[in-house]
Length: 245
Length: 257
Image 1 (spheres, each protein chain N blue to C red):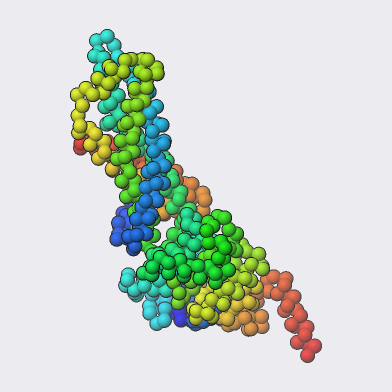
Image 2 (tube, rainbow over the protein chains, first blue to last red; image 1 turned 180 degrees about the vertical axis):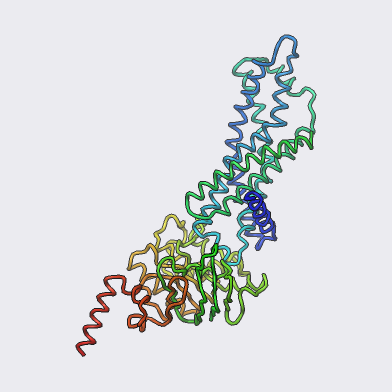
């Protein structure tokens, strides 16, 4: 029952969020600021994690799957499919739910408890629209770029195992990475990531915006934001995979 | 002028405000006083529309706030300025940007005019030198002054202050009180201040409303408050040693006469 009430509150908040901005110039300023804070500042962590995961996937497949009766392109092929279909969209968004989600929830929660949100309301500003919409739009705008960076860094990570680790030849890996390439999988990755970006930004904003109390409530909202976005990402990943596969 | 008629508010069955009636005139500093937990902040939130009363009405110059349409409410909000207990300045914006925020949001003036107006407001609260600093880099008293500058940026008709002196030393508190009173007179604003600070009451209390456990207990001004014959009010006013001594001195001097 509590979850149902919470879902209703979330829908009401989204209705207030998706309204016409008061001043487009102010909205655009805020949007650019959020792109920098939520998107550009996440590039580093996306590159680092994707690089190492790409390398680890390659090593694990090479060590555990490859055998004499399997073609040499298997390692590259499987690495590519994992990166494209799951890691660079779903898993990377799970990581972002931790970084960006907690950032959004704690920022809005702190604004709420320090009455900055009330100050906006008193001025006659639709605070949900002014604070949340730029976050949602900036996440949705930046996510394809982050997914592309993740795929790219994962592939570089995979190559690094052959360049520096020497576990297999770069030619075999490259052949596997290109083998039976299906362009649709890239689009599936992008489509899924749009949904995940919306979940991360809107769910985290909901928990932050609805904080009641003090600093403990902000901390709790931040944790709830990360847990709920992660669960919803995994659930919607399953649904989207069934629909798009 | 702001008028409150039969304001009732309760939370989860617990009555917080009961039958509050009052009139706050413009050009005057109107104070709502009472102990912590007496319902002052809830009443203030009902007046500014952050909370809707269960019963009763709030009239802004004869216009019923809770019966207004969305657009009318928005328009009236632009005539309001509010100074929060915490200052409520936007952390990510500099002092100048904070004061410019309402202008950027609602004014059609050119950028240069907005900067000029924001600088005038900062100058009015003697903070011109801090315009490039961020809220975290200035003291609590300065934050309150920035909040005042932001509140008057759009030339409000109504100014609300929720415990503007909390957390400030007595000297800075007097500066803030004097500033609020000066601005009220200068711009002929209807100002409502929530406070439990008796120094403020004695300094700027032109009209005082005493709330006790959610009910209006007494109404008057600073001249009458020390001689009022209301036990609950006397318990509140003379809770501090300083005011007790003032009362003792007055009693002695009147008996000598």
